[in-house]
Image (cartoon, rainbow, N blue to C red):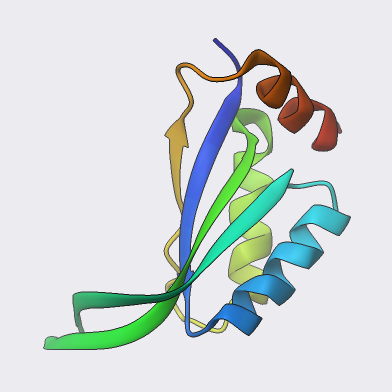
Length: 106
């Protein structure tokens, strides 16, 4: 359908992700970021099982911009290994998909 991808990121809290999202939108790397304030993540880190409260971000961009988005997130993110996953959008509202592509034009 399009070049649009959805991305998932987590961070320590809502404010950190909102700052990151603002920077990515201002730099035209993403069209938008939705932030869910409190999720609980269970994961293994440095040999230990951890359980932490985090914020979850869902971003929209294009596959063509995904490498630049990942690089910028790694520069701005407080984690050593931030979660950055991209999922192809295979169907969706054509006007919204077009809007995403327009917002991240190079």
